[in-house]
Length: 469
Image 1 (cartoon, one colour):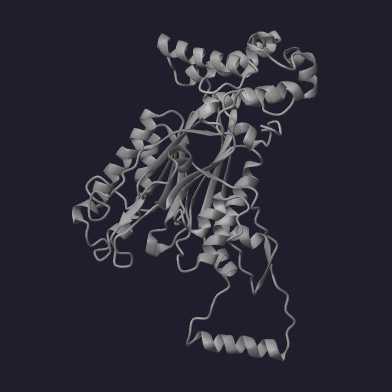
Image 2: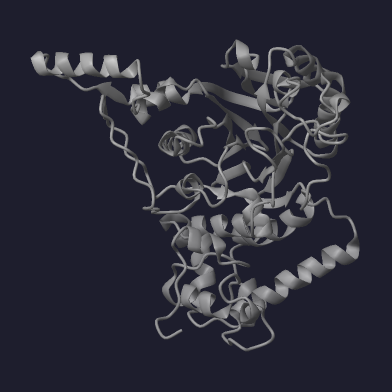
């Protein structure tokens, strides 16, 4: 199973048309017709060349909405959108498009500000002469200076909307969300509130299922808000107190997100936003992300440039000041083996099927073939052949090479010898599974359920070695 997630901030036309905004861009590259032709070309390539492509768009506008609707209809896509902006920004909003053939189980439109308000309540204050006098003083002072506002009240006032859908791909449910974070660099507390609440809300909506959250988050990889989203038990951000509301929300620092680009490339892109404007001269940074959680493996990501190709975007080939980002997620072979193996260790399946394989507490190389026929079919064979099926591999040499590697690795894991040089575990001890893990598994009939990698065992806290290893 694979799903392709594309996220693109397409730039509201009313911003591009301001003559004093993108001063270093050639006027013809800011025209709506030029930009729209490039946008639809980029999106169509993603849809045509990839299976199960889901498009997430930010900075939709009332002006472009009819063109976008017709574009997706032509490609047999269903398009959902929410415009939450105001007249000055052409009622800017977000949207998501999925193939008509894709099963849609649910769709939610949630204004994060309203959600924050729903988990808060105004503080009850007893009216007296002092409070009346204080309120009168604040009202008078607000006419002359800008008083500090309550960050929670500011967060509630933002209309930014999360679109979250649940789809089914190859009988597997998955939630997809898109969001455009409020651009409030001078109010980091408000952005931290939105980030934390958004993250925990996605976990709540997914209810234990896999999910992906893509969009323009207006945060950089070194910002505190990025750590809030991605770092477990992060304590570098304490949400502010509210002077006017009782806040019942408490961030869940145990549940965090992974970033597709960082998981695949080891780091976030060099940049996803580049422009030169009077308010932000020569701005070049990463603001767009595809986050995810669950049993998903990043197969590939859309390659992005390391350096801008002009003085400022939009330009001849870039219709927006943002780059389009994309990632393909897949269900990996080791994930399938891990979970089938894990299920075979439940009480009934272990007693009636898998126990036969565990009669050897100190396994040897030939033990791997001793298994119940159902186990051999569902766990061993399916987990091996799922990889060439997913990749649609037809070349005999490649298939034989893959089968040889899997059989060699299985025999080595059951050999009882942790020899140097001849196993992948020797070179990548943190990543690869091997004899040490599988010996422990046979001795104790628990822990270390992975076959090729230790990733799922570490994720599920079932990775264990002997104390002296």
